[in-house]
Amino acid sequence: MNSVPTVTVSLADRSYEIAIRAGLLEKLGREMKRYGLKGKVGVVTDRHVAPHYLKKIIETAKQSGLEPVPIILAPGERAKSLHTVEHILDVLARHRFERSSHLLALGGGVVGDLTGFAASIYQRGIPYIQVPTTLVAQVDSSVGGKTGVDHRLGKNLIGTFYQPRAVWIDPLTLHTLPTREWVAGLAEVIKYGIIADESFFTYLERKMPALQKQIPQVVASVVKRSCEIKAEVVAADERESDRRRILNYGHTIGHALEALGGYQSLVHGEAVGIGLVQEADLACFQGFCTDKVVAAIRRMVTEAGLSDRLPRATPTKMWKAMLHDKKVSSGQVIGVWPTRIGEVRMAPLGKDVFDRWYAESRAASVNASVVS
Image 1 (cartoon, rainbow, N blue to C red):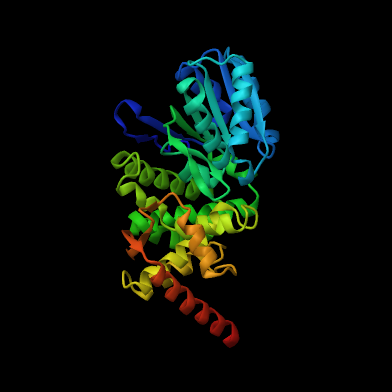
Image 2: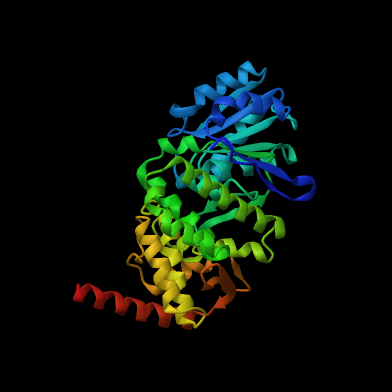
């Protein structure tokens, strides 16, 4: 795994590297020196991650001549709020952070989004570095510069585009992940194969048992390819005006399910896993793909250990939750629909179509339960 190359996100003067190396956290001091970090560095993490890595990183930063300031947050999606951002900003102001000071986002997607958002607005922008420790963060949320917080009416409604200086990925941190979080992260990995790379999807079909066992070489390969696809898409469309929207596949329904559950009943990847299957089924209902595509996606999601079933909710509540998503344009839900494995298209979704699909899929689900 140490031979895994660096992935570059090409964005002109905002370009940066994604370093993927086992044991990278043990050599973080070298990376800090290489990037010329000086003075104060805020290490933002949460109560779940801190016991595993915070002490080591604080010691490393001190040995590198830096002044580290730990900022420990509550864990989970419910911490992703303006109140938490205000807390981070309070710490930065109290410790007199300057525009040359850095932040390190040590944790999962929530920590990364909060840290990036705080960095983007403190003194009109200070540099930050992503140090993702979850599978979702390593393959998705740490790359691309999307930052932000949730609003009670929808996920990620408040935020900025603000690229990190670098992303430092140590796949060994995944060994401390709870099983539920590891499995949930596989949804984002599967997404990449569906939207952009049929051969990667085929690779995942072959390697899913090894991936579930976290075989190091397979994990490193999957993280690298996922980052490559994300980097390619972001480089082509940094601010999500066109192609980058394909990364939202599975998230229209997924985000709605998270919101309906109060960000407690499902973790992000679990909601996205359901979204991958249900949005494929919706695509098939609209004539965008065949039922064989839906079956392949459903099989992959369930083999990963994720649910493919919609939780109980009325179509009205689902639709209202979907309307609060940031992907809505001119009052229309813009969906990402697979046409085959490795290719998707974007098209608006009408409420009448959604209601008819929902009624038919519910009826089919009830019939399947009766038969079984």
